[in-house]
Each structure stands twice: as structure tokens, then as C-alpha cells.
Image (cartoon, rainbow, N blue to C red):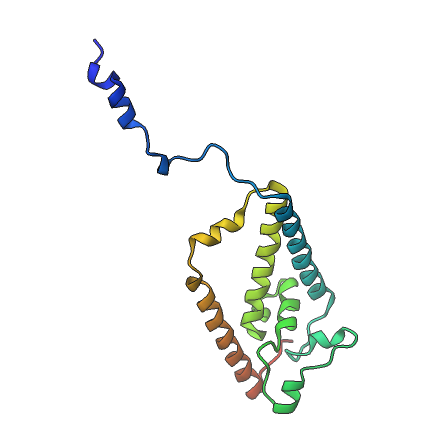
Length: 174
């Protein structure tokens, strides 16, 4: 004999999950403009990585960018003997795309971090462009203070590391 308490409509309604915990019927999709922007971000990210692959890394730890026509070596470094905050970034990217992550991290830790983020941006934007699913919405779940302040602290620490390398004459990777 069935239990009338279980089969009652009031009991069934109380077993249904509240709307806040259930998935929406239709997942959100990106608009055409957002997909085009994702493609442009992917192209930009891949272009940066390909340019880094084109340039052989400088064994001195700085000056890889000067291999492009019209670009000079770092004037801040030449005039003061101290590196600018971006010294070694191109060299770090160049080592990164060759798979020598240790050299990339040693030459410029922030360059290694930005190279990783460039790869993540390329993959995420390709995913968004193909599927139409807004993967970038996940960033809204984490407050910016949890990733922006650590990145800023890493940038300052990486600049200090680069100064340490240059002042002690141990910059570069052979």
C-alpha cells in the first residue's frame, strides 16, 4: 500500500530544488561581436608568440627585441646601468616558446608569467570563438584584488630580480 504522505503534491513540491540551485534552461552564448573580438584576441596572442619564436634569444639576457629593424637596445639600461621594468621580456618570451621555461623564468619572471597568460588568452579566446560559451565569465567569480595585486607585486619583484642579475653580472642564459 503506497504511503499517501510521500505521494502528496505538497510533499513532491518540497523535494524540488529551489530555482537558485538549478541550472537555467538555456546557457548563455556570446554575441557575434564577442566572438569576433575573441578571434582578434587569439590572432594577437598567437602573433606575439610567433614573433617570439622567430627571434633567437639573446645570450646576454636583454636586447632580443633589437633584432627587429628600427628597434634600439634599452636606452634606460645603457644610460643608467640599471634595467627598465620590461628589460628581458622579449628574451624571456623567446626562451618560453622554445620550451626552455627555466631560462625564461630566470631571465625575467614577469616575462614568463605574461607568456603563460598569453598562451591562456590564445586558448581561451579560441574556445570562446568556436563554442560561443563565455569562458571569461569565470573571472567575475574571483575578485580582482586576488589576481591584480599579486601580479603587480610579481612585476616589482621581477624588476628587482633583473636588477640583481645585471648588477652582479650573472644575467643571461647560454
